Amino acid sequence: MKNPIDHLSGLFAKRKPFAKLAQEFCSYLRKTFPHYAWVGIYMIEGGDTLVLKAWDGPEATEHVRIPVGEGICGLAAREERSVVVDDVNKDPRYLQCFLRTRSEIVVPIFAGKKVVGEIDIDGDKPAAYNETDRLFLEWCAARLGATAPG
Ligand code: SME
Image (cartoon, rainbow, N blue to C red; front, top):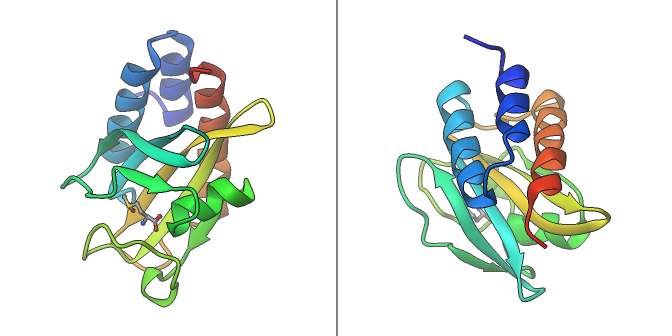
């Protein structure tokens, strides 16, 4: 099996339509990394709403549209930075999707200097995400941003 960076580089190089790329990306990450329990991609629409475009996980979330003012997802978009939450139960900004979720990482997708979307990953264990996850997902987000529509 190819290493994940080689596999993803191949996926990003194929110039697929963004919706297809986003779906394959979410499914590949979840299948490859057991601590990525739920993987989603939200894109900003109308300037102030994050809209779920692709996801892979054991169940669907009811949060398919999130105002940029809400949740950990909104925080990452507003502050234009990656956000790691080690214990979602201790963070009042957290919007609950799944009872089993204990930690979360959200990484903005930039097109140029503008945030156009984000990668959102939920974990079933506390403090599931470290600097390696952040750097890896920021690498992925940069490539997704290069393919993202408008
Ligand atoms: N927990 C997120 C909402 C999205 S679900 O995790 C899929 C938040 O706090 O913004």
